[in-house]
Amino acid sequence: MEQEFDRRELLKRGAAVSGLAALTAANWPLPALALGEELVPFTDTDQPINREPAKAGVNHIVDTRTLDTFYTPNENFYVVQHYGQPEIDTAKYRLRITGLVDTPMELSLDDIMKRQRIELDAGFECGGNMKRFFYGLVGNAKWAGISLSSLLKECGVQPEGKEIVFFGADEAEEEIRKLKVKQNFARSMSVEDAMGKDNMLAYEMNGDPLPHFHGKPLRVVIPGWFGVANVKWVNQIHVQDDRFMGKFMARDYVTLRKYDVGGVERWTEESITRMNLMSVVVRVTRNGDEYKIWGFSLNDGTPLKSVEIKVDDGPWKLADLHREVSKYSWKMFSYDWTDVKPGDHTIVSRAIDINGNIQLTEEQVPEKATYWENPGQFPRTIKTT
Ligand SMILES: Nc1nc2c(c(=O)[nH]1)N[C@H]1C(S)=C(S)[C@@H](COP(=O)(O)O)O[C@H]1N2
Ligand SMILES: [Mo]
Image 1 (spheres, rainbow, N blue to C red):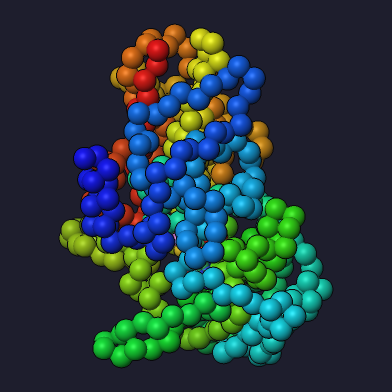
Image 2 (cartoon, rainbow, N blue to C red; image 1 turned 60 degrees about the vertical axis):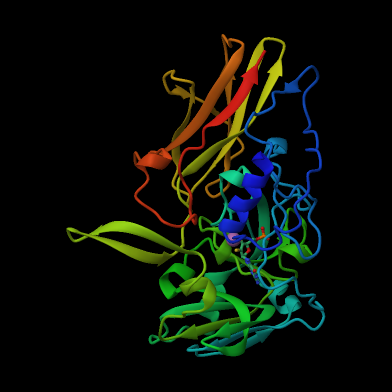
């Protein structure tokens, strides 16, 4: 019954993320636990989500209850792709920089690797990350590559250049107004956004050459932005003087939301960009009478002031933010839960940044008709004995 409902619900949501057809009811893998520690099962997790390890052609959703390392191992980092996973021969690979630049370029991976290497910790989530995946479209990694802004400066973006478009090698035939046309996955941003000093073109992930599923040999990493900005298998960067309106800018990954527009309530659509302030409880562990609540928080890089935990109708209490942190990484937290009474409990977290922004409840989030960018609090339920 429950499962039926979930399946229908999933279909209704239009299988936001492709590859969800491969639903299985396999058991959750056991997370690494300390000696004597046991996992307290959530009572909200019996859902048909894809728990398969990353493999060709399907999306990989992380079992968030197993997250116990700061860097997500490459084989467990979530995988989302819309047009398949192109195999690129690294020896033949070229990155072309075209359009409104003084010096168009065509670079091999060697040419790219000869430039100054930079490293950056960044976590990100899919803009379609949501409760029914227990926020498993997520990961945190150390990326290495070259600075995007340095490369753009080297090419010399001309004053008329307004928009930078990143094209991936993955392609599909799309029907647009009854015409079948070849499209590549592509995303764009303003020159100003692209020039952000931390943006990179990454060829390494957690010390290994960029894995195939994650865009081998080169991908964009725009730290602080939703995953969709991080174009994988990138082989062309184009500078143009007008907006780019490809599918993943103008139709998909677009939030419909009611805003106050100069005193008028209007429904407006926006292409998603920076991550919202979010946090989520992902596991509860028990060691004898001691309970611990674990989770992670992500946002656009604005420093966090705190993450707080609320159990049932109790007050908000400060969680401990783990020390292994960098500006754009996720922030893992834990909370020592004491005086636990046996029974059913609801646990929820909220993140607060240094500007005083508070992660709201879903009801407090401005009216929003799409599931993209779901930043609301996520109450989890468990049973203690
Ligand atoms: N070329 C290409 N890049 C892409 C995509 C894609 O379909 N094709 N998907 C985007 C989306 S929607 C997300 S959430 C992230 C996922 O990155 P990951 O699979 O490395 O986790 O890649 C982005 N980059
Ligand atoms: Mo995504």
